[in-house]
Image (tube, rainbow, N blue to C red; front, side, top):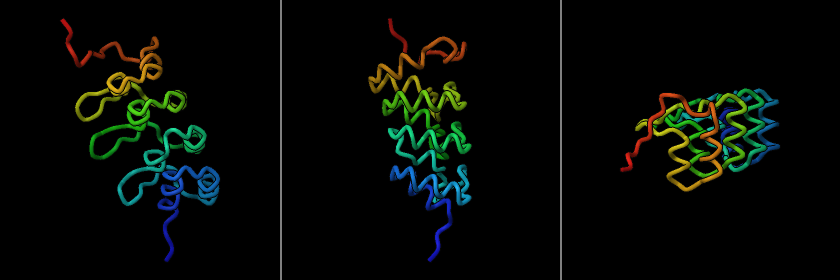
Length: 140
């Protein structure tokens, strides 16, 4: 049985197999293709593996592709898990940190809620949060 290249690429990406990912990209796998769960190789990647993320982005992966269920981006996932270096790489490749998920969370909200100080501080740098961003919580 022969599997489509996108399935192999998503599997290699999810397993953190950088060399296999590079080989599949060279073989013509679509870096923005969807697997059977409607997710891209970047969306299923081991986000703590910054080299792998960097390779996918360099090949043209869309850092703003949204999850079809909760409207999350990879930046939401990386921020929630505290992968500061990956968040930096995503932003450097055009990730929009002002995209909200299904319930209005920015990546900043998820990083702060999970206690990831480095990602939180990175996300509040000047120019990183839109002027219309409003906090979801009210403190008196």
